[in-house]
Amino acid sequence: MAYKHVIWDWNGTLMDDGWLCVEIMNRFLTRRGRPKIGMDFYRAHFQFPVKRYYEALEFDEAIDPFEQISHEFIAAYEAQKRECGLYPGAKDVLSQWHAAGVEQVILSAYRQPLLIEIIDFYGLNGYFDRLIGLDNIYAEGKTGNAQLHAASIPHAPHELLLIGDTVHDFEVAEAIGADCVLVAHGHNAPDRLRATGAMVVESLAEVAARIPVEKNTDG
View (cartoon, rainbow, N blue to C red):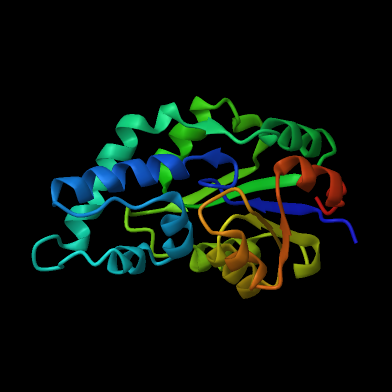
């Protein structure tokens, strides 16, 4: 059955920023005299709530409180985020589905004002019916916002598709009864994604080619 309403994750799904997250973290680790991490470590350990990822990095909470590190990380990220690009095929699939009349929204763990700003920077506003971010920088997760959004739209769960790049995206989709497609180019390793049982694809071009959508006529 074709989907009428597509819920997109942003970071790591449409925006290629994993490399920047690793680069910033390595600057933090170097300043503390600790070994750098690689992309493989990052994709194997990144998770939500993000605080668990910091715990995997073994930061000493007494010396580096999570809230302090979070503020430092966001400041560094904001300074460089415009160096990131969209993944190949991002605008193509968004444009294709928008032209077909499919509803598309962004559901992100990014802070709401920053999400609005970065979507505008990439010139993507016209493709989305709604942008849904968090009200803080701590990236606890997206389940609550997803449930509120699903309750606000006139669609049955089987008409909803969530597209993301992390195990958490699968968990969010399960919480609202939506189907889920996970793209293996983002913040979690492909083996972690496949372990969820969701459909895993290699690229956004594959998403566009394999996923059936249809125009929403529910008003």
